[in-house]
Amino acid sequence: MSNYHIKHLEEYYQVYRKSVREPENFWEEVAEEHFMWRKKWDNVLSWDFSKPEVKWFEGAQLNITENCIDRHLATRGNKTAILFEPNNPNEASISISYKELSERVNKFANVLKDHGIEKGDRVCIYLPMIPKLAVSVLACARIGAIHSVVFAGFSSTALSTRINDSQCKMVITSDGSYRGSKTIDLKGIVDEALNDCSCVETVLVVKRIQSDIHMESGRDKWLQPLLDNASSICPVEVMNAEDPLFILYTSGSTGMPKGMVHTTAGYMVYTAYTFKNVFQYREDDIYWCTADIGWITGHSYIVYGPLANGATTVMFEGVPSYPDYGRFWEIVQKHKINQFYTAPTAIRALAKQGLEVVEKYDLSSLKTLGSVGEPINEEAWHWYNDNIGKKKSPIVDTWWQTETGGIMITPIPFVTPTKPTYATLPFIGIQPALMDENGYEIKGNQVDGRLCIKFPWPSMARTIWGNHQRYKDTYFSAFENKYFTGDGALRDEVGYYRITGRVDDVIIVSGHNLGTAPIEDAVNEHPAVAESAIVGFPHDVKGNALYGYVILKDTGESRDHTNLRKEINQIITEHIGPIAKLDKIQFTPGLPKTRSGKIMRRILRKIACNDTSNLGDTSTLLNPEVVQSIIDGAKDSK
Ligand code: PRX
View 1 (cartoon, rainbow, N blue to C red):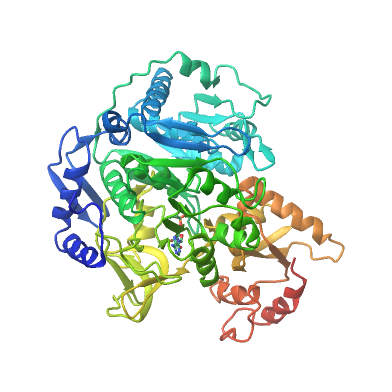
View 2 (cartoon, helix red, strand yellow):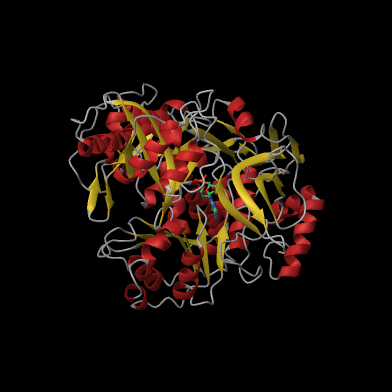
């Protein structure tokens, strides 16, 4: 276990140097020591960022579920694999042991097979955070089907777009979901989505809220009776190292969401290795990541990374505010959570509630705190450190992306001295570079630039489903021979990284990536709207919120702006989901444009932030006069 658990800073530097000097030897050793292979690799790595093509552990054969489940059965069969905490605190939590997980996954895998699902088929999973979500993910992986989990807060249009893009044959959903005091009609959303999806043959339905739903005959089936009749033995499909494991969609700054494709062996090795080190997980620890499995954080650090380590991973169905804002801390106390991993937006929302709701609970089990999804501001960092970690649990501010598959820049707890708002040092094997606008790498410290990665790592996405050219254009064309993250970063005097935010038109709202173009497309669907531009502005809980500038076709005073605002947000909810709703809408006679017709978002961002002191040179605009009218109109935005 020499290089599996890093214990002090010197060891970090030593292992880091080795991982950079001899990456192939390094990853080969990790892969040799800790996983179960049906056949070992012929070649550790081949890569060419100009194509781009990256292959790890080529020639190896394995199944990730043997690594996440079967190999633990002999030593950890009765250990809890998944600890489920329901939305309603009065409903009992459920512990699923590795042995039970094995049975559940095997049965589910057999049901998939009985419905014609084979290796390489795509299965869309649209489920709430209940154990069946993790089980269905693993069942797909067991038979080599490619899962495409869609976050169950997305609208029917967003769902059908994703189903059609990867031509899913099956959808797994539930009658509905609980979300705090509300219920959501998931099956209704699926029915609507499927009006536009001819590729779907079967819908398996989990009973969760016991609601009365429509079941389309010949297409929709209740899952439970099928599971009851299925065998609990399902031999694995032996997969090649580079066979796709899953597709997960992420927003781009333009166009369709991108179906990031992750493959099997490298993803497994990297998520398992990072999980163990970034959370310093020990055998009897209880680990809780509050993300949803609909996002990459849930894939890598609720399901695959923890289970590959034989860990106990908590799944929480509810929201931090139900039945009150003490819920997270109540769960920490109840399950004696050792590692707690959440998002800055949740920390900010909880910090607003005052300390009484925190002080009621015993948080002494906590050893490590994590943060992910967006930059954590200084105030939130200190609140988390002082009141939750009581200054004894290090905060790991983990920077990574859907595309990177695993954590890339992060402190290692009890190893890397932390610094508020800094993700600190590259993880083992990760070679960041800061680039200037002319395409040159900026060397040395106390510099800032565009964050790139200059060498492959095992869990990087290999392509965009059905559009390799877009993968190349988006990530490998801005800087030669480097993966471009889309983020800006600075490197301080000791080499610590601080992520400063997106440098493209993606806005991170409550930790969720939102591209401006798809939201603008939705707004423009309103019959009264001529044109729109969306920018982000700082928000004390969400990190960023959305500000929409809208030009109406008919600017007559008679228009009821309050209703228009509601209607515009309703269209956004239908097209994308409630997370993309605009916090403020300003109706404006025009938008500042360059002579080539491009909207000058820089100016709009400044006005949205109420920072109009230095708008820069506006004289080159096609319509400089419009700027003053936007500034004047900003006070009426709502
Ligand atoms: O801008 C960065 C921000 O989230 C983006 C990736 O979003 P997504 O693919 O949804 O994955 C989120 C979970 C891994 C990044 O490009 N981001 C993520 N983590 C951090 C962050 N920004 C600052 N600090 C972080 N720790």
